[in-house]
Length: 161
Image 1: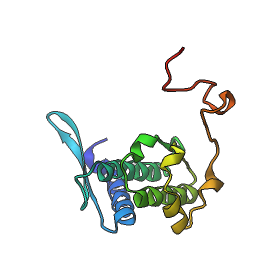
Image 2: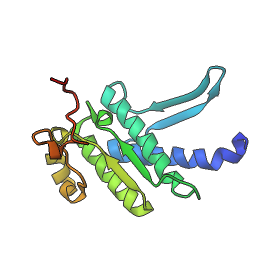
Image 3: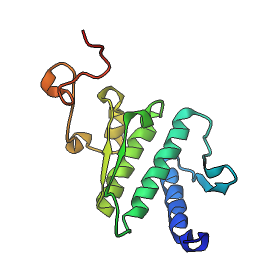
C-alpha cells in the first residue's frame, strides 16, 4: 500500500488530533508524521508547547485519535490503555478534559478506554466542574493496605524483607 492509498487514514487521524487538542486547549494542535533517512518521524506542535505536561497531552491526543479511527477497521483492538505516567505533570484541568473526551469518544464509537491513575492524582474539583462522575466509571481500585487490595497480592515498589 503506498502513501496515496493511506492518505484517507492518516488524514482522518490528523483531523481527529486537531479536534482533540482543540477540546483540551481551546486551540488546535498539529501533528506531523512521515519517513526520512533515519526512519519514522512523529512530531506534535501545540500552541502551549514546551512543558512536559503539554507534550504528554500531545501523545494522549495522538493515541485517542488513532483509537477512534481504528474503530472503523475490521480488525481492531477495541480498547486503549493509558498508564498514570501519561498524566504526570499535566495540568489538572487537562487531565479532567482528557478523561471526559475519552469517555465520550469511547461510548460513541464503542471501544473501551482504560486509564490507570493514582487516586491522589485525580483532579476531583475539575472532574466535578465538568460534570464527569468518575466514580461511576471505576472498575477496579487497588490499594496497598491489605493484600487482597493489591495486584496479584504483591506490593509493587517495595523490596522484599
